[in-house]
Image 1: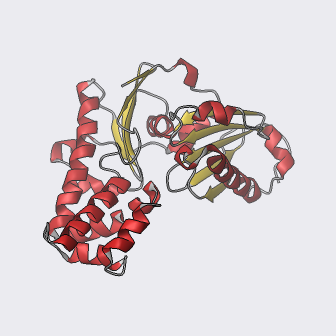
Image 2 (image 1 turned 90 degrees about the vertical axis):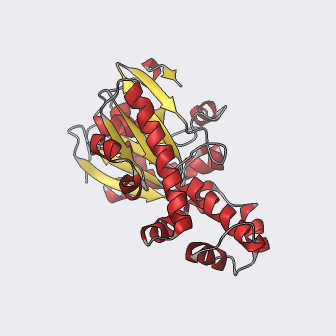
Length: 299
């Protein structure tokens, strides 16, 4: 059990899950924790509860107790942090840590991917966004939230396939094995799909993305069109950074590996493996190796 010294906690709260990693002063990993979605789109209170579950799991993994939270400096990356009033509401929550600094999940992923240096990332996960850093200036493209934005994301892929499935039911579009499997998830009842959609979250829609990608790889024509559309959207974000003079590019997120083969050859050749993940970026913030307040955001 660790009994002395300052501790650092990095958290990545995304649309599908929340991860926490605890390190000591030397950077040794002491414990990790996992919980469910932690996005402000589900509400600040729900997001915070998910964050605390992941942090508690990381502390327990490190054989630490609740009292040890007072020795932890936390950097918390959160999806939806830019929503109006979200950061202010989070800052009002009483927390058990020595200090807390909030950062967007996209910026954390960029910091982690390039160890805080100039570079850019495009996130292809439940949502999508492009985030870059150049000489301390943050560039951000997309990521306004599902369903009005986040093109190329898992949620967007899920939305597109369900739309096409409903069109097929009406005879307004062709069907395929992919659409038959999608409809089967709703007992071949279009109205059951409609009822589901009235309550579905971005995470729920994103759950259909692996099915679409699987059928696309098997040659399903509708699956291919949907995935090609998603890859075009991700490629557009990468191109934006190239035009800004940023050539250190990484693709991150749960769908990144699946999307890469669908990108153009020139974009695939430009991609670099990320050096670290969003939790690593959040830890840089926790250690105050990157000052969030000094990074002006441009769109």
